[in-house]
Every structure is written in structure tokens, then in C-alpha cells.
Length: 56
Image (cartoon, rainbow, N blue to C red; front, side, top):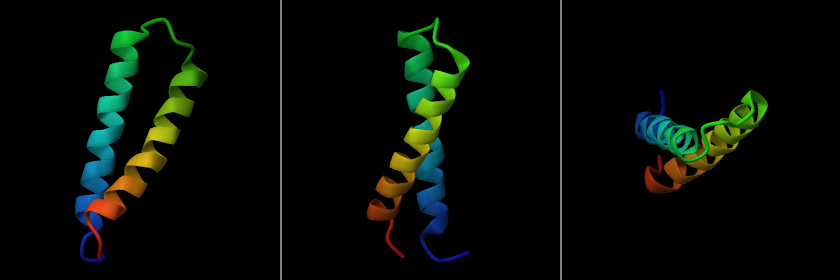
């Protein structure tokens, strides 16, 4: 593992968890495919933000 990648992965995981929790809480009757798309996009965004916050 590269130095900093653990922090980035932890940040991305927590970010995805929070986004999915908020979507489930705010919009409870969402279609499964929409939830998967939101989770995927939040994983991309969380990974990008994590790499900026925790550089190598």
C-alpha cells in the first residue's frame, strides 16, 4: 500500500456511508438502481476528495 492510501480509503468509505445514509433518510422510497448510482458517484467523489486531503 502506498503511504496515504489508507487515509484516502477510510475517508472515501466514511463519505459513501454518510451519503447513502442521508439519501436513505431524506428520500426513503428511492429505486435501487438510483441508490447504486448515488453510491457509485459518491465513491468517486469521496476518493477524489480523499486523495486531495491525504496526498501520498
